[in-house]
Amino acid sequence: MNPTPPDRPSAVPAGRHTDPVDADRARLAPAHADSARIELVRIEQPHIGAASVDAVPLEAAAVETARVDAVPLDAASVQTVPVDAASGDAAAVDMAPVDAAPRSRRPRVSWRLGWPLSFAAAAALPAVAGAYPVGIAAHALVLGLLAMSAQLLVAVAGLPAFGQPAYFGMGAYTAALLSRAGHQQAPVLLVVAALAGGAAAAITAPMLLRTRGTAFLMATFAVQSLTATAAIRWTTVTGGDEGLHTPPALPWPGGTPLTAPAYVYWYALAVVVLSYAGIVVFLRSRSALTLRGIAGHEPRMTALGHRVTGALTVGYTIAGVLAGLAGGLLIIVNRYVSPADIGFEAAALTLLAAAIGAGTMLGAMGGAALVVAVRDGAGIGTGGLSPLLLGLLFLAVAYLRPLAVRGSRPFLTRARRGAR
Image (tube, rainbow, N blue to C red; front, side, top):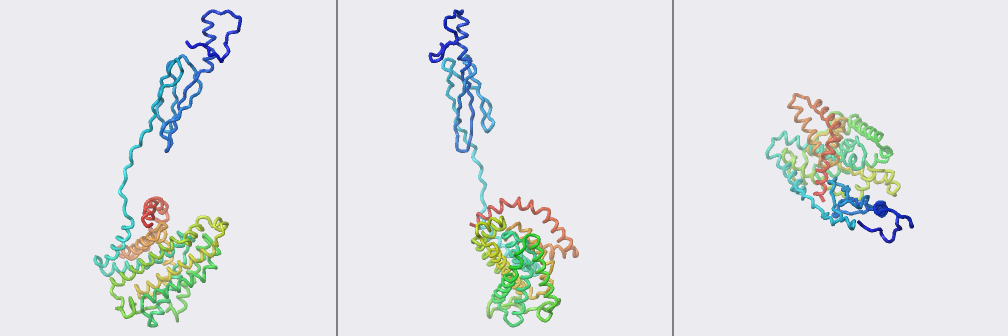
């Protein structure tokens, strides 16, 4: 039994005689009041392996063990720590950190190698398919380039554009008139068509960019409708409903005309691949970063001093250039253009392909391939039910696209890392 500590006054009043039992109880009273209670609280953090121990007063010094409250973050069981009854000190506790089981690493796919293989497989299509499927694939490339122009506005700039077929028509009719005038070189047709689409977009951008959201969607729809109406009514230039037929294009000056479906398809594929490379370079530029910031929070970008209208005008003009380039490619592939190519159905299918793409350029290309396959492939095989199938595809995209976007985030993250 421990004696009374010398620095504490005795609980027995001076001059009072008590029996030995009462004296012992009196000497135990201070020890009972000031005894320690040991409580171990184990705190596990990613960078801390050992446990921290906090000692607080004990409730009973006469017991041989102290109750230990272990409250680790991983809900470990409560342990009992032996305590020396004479000194009240806890025994040494070995709380060595437990190494976590090593995570199994999955083999990573080289995405830098995946995209060239995809393009190589696309280039091999004429070797395994007939003339009609190759022709459908060439039209899918044209729609895919147009869908990428819409994706640049919808996914990057945050502008729900519905009028890209207007600039598509400007490029197509310009290339058609130039080809009918005797300038059949395909590079010249593509450059002039791209410049025509970009000029038309730059002219209409100041008026359209005064609006946002649904108002912007309706304004671009008005531009598309006016362009289609002008193509129908201006018969002396556009040929009206009959459209314009053009001679075959030449891949280079003095070359053989592009008439074979395989060569036409390969030329269109080369144009799309080069266009995609240019889009990738633009998406890594400061202008594209500014467009993403505007799409995320336009008032904040304005407060930071960015010229929002100017940045959106640049993005809208580049999207017009892509749409005009797709129009020139239509003349090379189809050798014909009519108001139906820039009507409401073309605008709706372009926006549908962009929506299927889930915010990526290659996704827009895949969406265009799916739309053309449903319209020109499955529709013919089902006895002309392509409008019904397209309607079902619209409903599926409207209801399932949020789930598809969430499910494709890991894939898109790996793809963007591989593209760096």
